[in-house]
Length: 166
Image 1 (cartoon, rainbow, N blue to C red):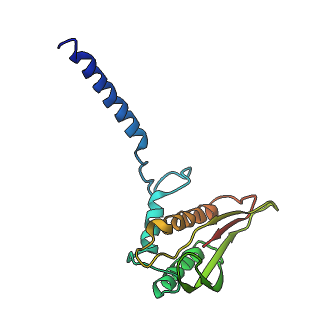
Image 2: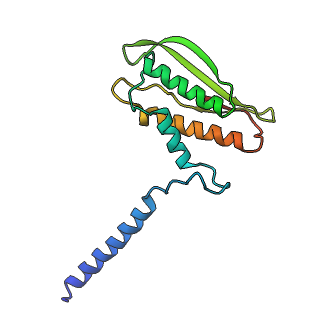
Image 3: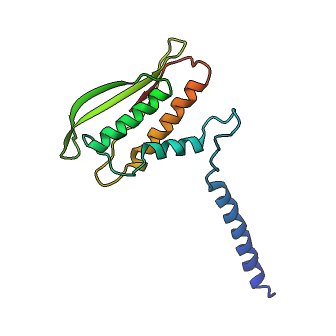
C-alpha cells in the first residue's frame, strides 16, 4: 500500500469504529418482559400492552368527541382496575390557540403517601388533534403515567402523595 493511502485507510477505519461505538450507545434498550425480575421498575412490555388497550383503533379522539369519551372510559377503567378512585372534573373550555371550544373532562387519581410532605404530580392529556390518534402527543405520556400508577400500587407505601392528572 502506498504511503499516501495508508493514513487515509487508517483514518477511515478509525472513523468507522468511532461511528459504530456511538451508534451502539444510541440504540434503544430492549423491552422488559412481563416475566422480568421484580427489581425491574418499568415494564416496557406491560406499557406496550396498555397502549394497545387504550388506543385499539388508532383513531383521533379530540376533546368533546365520542372517541374521546371512549378514551376517557378506558382510562378510568384502567385506573379503577389498579385500585384508584379517580375524581372527574367536567368543564367547557375554549382554546386560546385554536378557534375551538369543547366540553372537557379532566380527572385525577391519587396515591396517598404516609407523610405530610409536598405531593408529586404527573400530568398528561388524553385528547388528540382531529388529524391524528395522538400516540406521541400525548398518549405516550399517559401510558407511562398508567405504568407508574401500577408500579406505585405494587410498591411499599410512599412518603408523599402521588397525583396523576389526566
